[in-house]
Image (tube, rainbow, N blue to C red; front, side):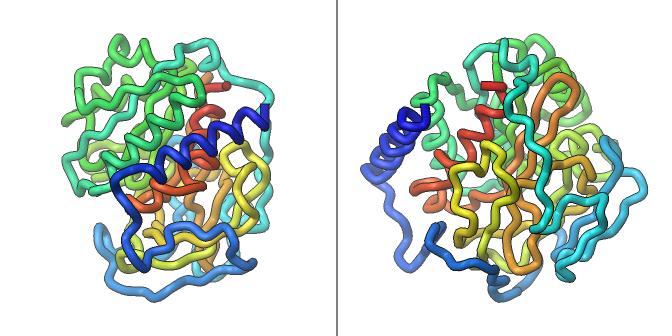
Length: 315
């Protein structure tokens, strides 16, 4: 099985290398040969909220009374799995009810807030690798899919950098997605999918609770940082212990204490990827993927996103 999956990875990489797009000169999205340790890069302005590099933890499923965590101190309370020393419990051998669902995957890309240029490239490369893994993908911005009946045909939903009110105003789509997950569906959130339905006046606890945190900004546009995997969850099992990225490294608020962190980045060990079981379903999230280039070369898609998707689907 490992040999077959390696073949999938090689095939996807070759497909990406043959793409008409090429990485921008001077950028190094991911360097798996990085030494141990982290580099925080240089700080700049704080767009999209201007929050400092910090995480606030919240009780499961609610905004609640937050417990602030200073991500710059390198220490965290025991209740928040955000420190690089945390080894989350992993049970990848017991698939959820989502395992019985179809192999169809909805890649949803609608935004009403900031829209990242990398969305089409990311959807393309995710679709290629998912096909090699035996899945069928559909990319859509159709809000009518976010009903109980509309989501029923899919074995997984990927929210790809969806911002603002991606399902439309109100809570109908949010509640349908929450029910889908709790009844055994798989949900994958990517990049600033955490920057949606996060206005407190919108009664956003359900959506933010599903994703597990709320976007709170990032220092500058890009930074060079070392990422460190936590444990051996399938979403990070094939990644190097430490590797370099050139990406936006997010800060979060309203961070759920039951998120199981699998990847931290920068010298302050910010959590950027986690997983969680929700009812009979599973959720996987990664904040990486701002630029076109990071999607076009290993290991983001084949060694991180696709394994996280397959785990969420119980496959």
